[in-house]
Image (cartoon, rainbow, N blue to C red; front, top):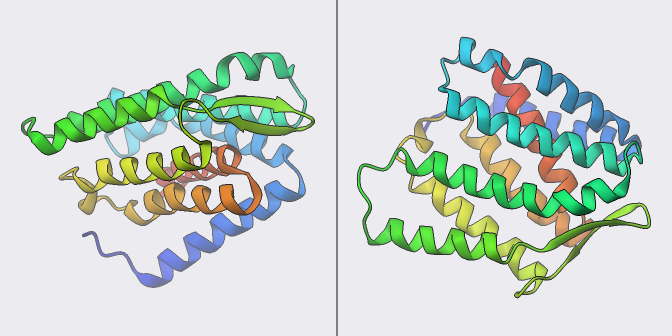
Length: 209
């Protein structure tokens, strides 16, 4: 596993906390963060020599975050979010999976199990609606709370079976961006907003790593 200085890890986690508190105080902060990400993420190709697939994945995440923040600030009609949010989540999960599977040397039983699990998660993605100034998740086939737990476990499995994951300088930020939203879902029903916010910040941090 990539060994990062503990002080750096703590400082980055404090940054995540500060950003979340700023967002909680004024949701327009999310818009500003996503606009900055959208305008600068292309530099990852130049700075870190990332392939085009990584840049595309980053922009899928940033675009979904931008739409989410525009919605919760009532900047755009809730109708657009209600019609596209669930689809964006499904596409982002599939894109992460397809991106990760490129690094497997071969398809074995373990990978087949992950493929089946990720397809199950995509099919059962809860319906997302913006109602009464909040994002509401409605269960689809399975309970939404169970879906949150399962998708967290399955995405974690994808990371842990990726041979390059443990050498990634951003390994701790990736884990934080995955696990913290699950906790916030059960504490404040803020899974989508926190997931979008933390992934947005994660991409921006990557620009300066």
